[in-house]
Amino acid sequence: MNVVTAKTKRVNGIDVNYLMDTIDAVAADPAKGMVSFRVASAWKGQTKSEHTVNSYTLGGAKIARSFKVAADEPVELCGENTAANPQELLMSALNACMMVGYVAGCAVRGITLEALTIETSGELDLRGFLGIDEEVKPGYEAVQVKITIKGNGTEAQFREIHRTVLKTSPNYFNISRPIPVEATLAIG
Image (tube, rainbow, N blue to C red; front, side):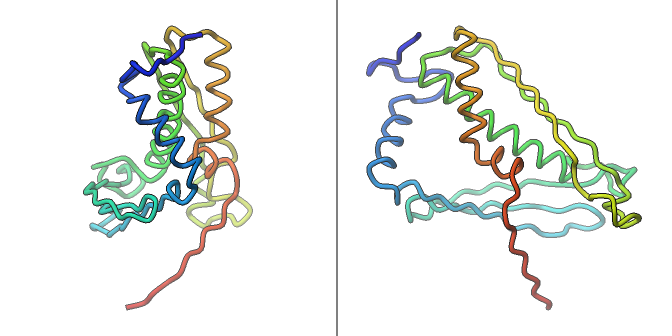
């Protein structure tokens, strides 16, 4: 097994020492590990929307950020095909979250990655979304995720990392298990 030493700075672009210090700090004081994210979304006409990230909170401290993400639907679903649609963004968010887990898991073990891809797919029945048949679910019956990983780790190490990612990825957790969503409506 490759071992990351104190002299190691970066593996797969990850500052391993910083990551380990973060793990130690959160283990010592769980309040430092409380993180809160928020996204504000606005309709931009037709099926287009823009989603803005201005900050997040980590350990009680607000940290400024500035990102915009666009969404649209394909022409065949009444959009203009100017951006990924909400389902593709959902899958992108799942893949990105899991990707971080694989990269960091390899980094802390000193495994150098050559390639890492994640492909996610699922099939929806539009009869549910369009309200045609109340018996048809508007969401997925199942989602398939294929991870392909290559590097200087052993098969056993990659399988261990895989199990850890499935156990610890927030977006994998959120998508693979029902979680409460509390939606409120304000008029005006």
